[in-house]
Amino acid sequence: MAEIVEGALPEGAELIEARFSGGPLLTLLVDRENGPVDHEFCVRMAQLVSPALDEEGYDGLVEVSSPGIERPLTKPEHFRRFVGHEARVKVAEPIEGRRNFTGRIENADETSFVLKLLEGGAEVELPFGSVARANLKEDI
Image (cartoon, rainbow, N blue to C red; front, side, top):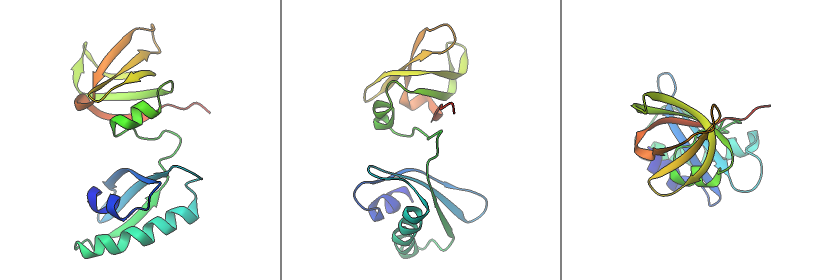
């Protein structure tokens, strides 16, 4: 599904996450390089993506939404883009006896990233392959 959606998006728009949300509802979190991810943008993206999904035989509902303030980090380039920002990370298998980490992204390469933990200030290197879920942590 993700490849179909990515192929239908215009330049400057990026698929952050595609997930099924209750039954046949496909929720797409989409971001853009320039400008807000407002209602008008989401409607336009749904109009572009729906025909491509129809051609592939998907006949369910499509919802396009902003990634929100606690944006999911799903690709290595997201971690690189948000160096210096705080993130919450859950790993599939325990690393150093734990699965949940919260800290500032210090750096990222093609295979892993380093978090400076909020509690204690230690640094931990986490391989991308171990990440079950990661989100920006923004305080309002």
